[in-house]
Length: 224
Image (tube, rainbow, N blue to C red; front, side, top):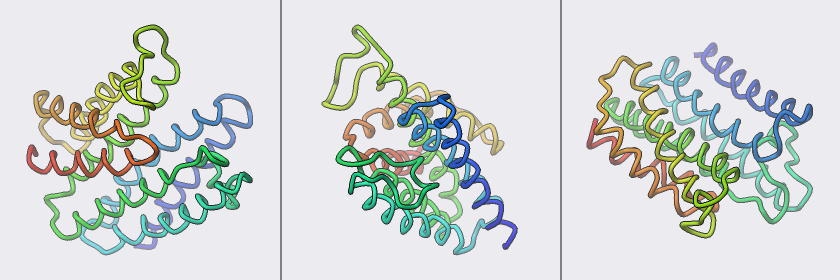
């Protein structure tokens, strides 16, 4: 158990540190830094189910980050950026900041709770989290770097290019997870899940870190 905590927190700190270093050396901008963290942190789910499957620790670890991210979020809203230096890699300073990082940790906590209650939810919850990380994460990256028809907005925040990226990368991310877990990969089911992810990602303002994983978990629970 102690080893599991060490590995989990060490991985999280490594990702956050790498994102800060990448921005410092101008390898990534602020938004690129945030999206790197957004995508890479989902792999904590694989670490957690490796060490803590069937135990309350599946809930306790993300719960600590709900608390830390709440503190960091309210600090960032004061224009100064996060008062927890390493967590600054997940935040925007000032008015642009949304509680998306809080919702991200809450979604992992919900996934841990469902898996703790019934182990059959381990895969559907993982699929929901990978949709959030890969689909929603890459939608932001692609959406801000498109032009022409791809840059046209579907909603105030979401573009056609971003939504297409959301679909493609959510399907790819879920396929990656299923292959890793030794599960059958059904293209038809992944397409359905990708479409659900794309629709659930539209709300924006951080809410997609709730709507995408929870919506996709529910659908994945039926499909898988």
